[in-house]
Image (tube, rainbow, N blue to C red):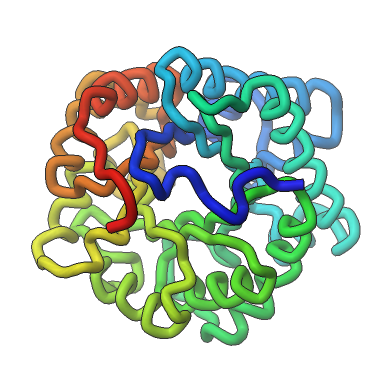
Length: 321
């Protein structure tokens, strides 16, 4: 049974840490081969499961040491129908993988969840396509139908919410919110941005959030931005408006490079953890409701420790925006 599905504690404004760059840590630092950047395939054997558990445990320990909340996601960003088929999973095997991923996090949560460190399990959902391009799009209704199976499976686990990452265009985000609403699941939508602060589709972040809210009855619990360097978020924040209060989360890359440059890179750009923490703090001054923070490509526990340290003394934005 989920613990926080009916009342997500991160909505109260205190600082919640997320995890870091799962796939880049596993592949570049630990030597795992991840076909199509798919971490959930590691659930199939003991070594892979142990690595995933250790990954979750290290961020749980960080949150405990910093006395923050914790939002950790299942390694299921690629565990949807098209990617699953490419990896040799049929629908039943894919559903089992999503359930197994949530169960692994629930096992860790049982040992460390506390009032000081509430541990929210997020069932992670990824795009049908590449995630950094918007050249192959679905309408909102097709996106709802496509993502419904994975979200329905996660709703039957101990996951407290679902979260969709690297959303490149609004229609897919709208479909995911509709699917989550149909399953009575809280959902966070995380849009990815290019270096100019716009979505890969060319939409502004403001328009993407406003349109998603308008077409879904504002069902999303909150919005995030991911897979972009913090300084590249700044151009997206030039306009004022209540949509900015809907932005509660950031999971940034360690690197200043664009998506195209990262895709072409042969090595890992880890950036500078201290500078990344400073960038988070600078961005928080413009987004005072930003309280769910983690990392994306190239980040690990060093970056998360810096982010936690820089934001730990920030004034909390208590209560709903």
